[in-house]
Image 1 (cartoon, helix red, strand yellow):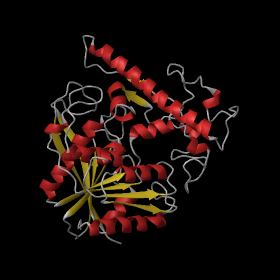
Image 2: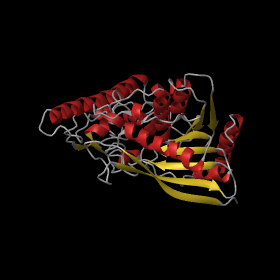
Image 3: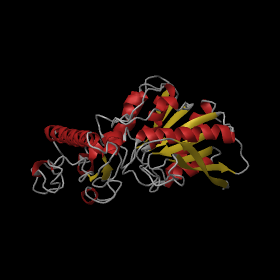
Image 4: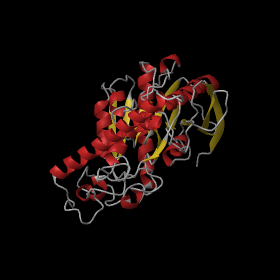
Length: 385
């Protein structure tokens, strides 16, 4: 077996903001924890750079397998590693940009390819959008944060590997629409509660119910956004305009796909989700967006406000794109892969399906070589060797 070298290192960059949202220094220094994973004795002119809004993927099976196949891999943890309660997507872009520039300067890579695994897919597309055509000077909450001044280095290609379209879109598709009042989250509308056995709407659901359910999810996301906007306006009108507020979002794992296998059909196991029993995960401690701040909601979870929307970002990029869909994925379903593929606004794109593969390649480790072979072939054909 190929021996790997794992080199942990830090990338530092500086910014000045009036509000701190992570632990760390007080002088504006931002610390990006990185790990370089390379096969021992193998050189390469290309680095595959992975990042995810909340990081922690340096030991993922696919990340390690790509390195064992002879590729140089870098995993960059954003400043929000392991905690997205105050996460700002624009700052994740800045952290990824610092890593890419350092990879070229420190290690001399000629080509940099973004590895967009899972939630890292929409981050990669958001980054590339702003690297190719910088435009954003404020976050969705209205705070000054100028990406146009960062001189972001465009990647040479993007691999979207078991990726979803965005954190905001994914959360909205999982929001429990039976919650009609955020101040009373456990008083739920029985006819929209898919976990209520007294609900007259049972799987397989008819189209009318699904449309009503999906509309309710979007409406709930918009209601939370409206409340957040009002809270921010109140704070900005006070004597502490940079103050922040934390809040809790209940009911974030209610998707008709979990209870009805005919919705977005695939090879996934029915009646479960990537967090286990969806009825328990719906209000469990690790659900998406469970703990939020006002500014974080606007940046990563608001369907109408976020700048990090994979489909919109994909339409504006010019680099080649590989989309890899795992057909038994419990988190990123086939419709997301198809939406991302269709959204890329040029023809230097391709999509591949790995039948039976789960999100992490844990249940079907035997399919990991197939994923690696597809990636390696794509990299070679684009001279990213």
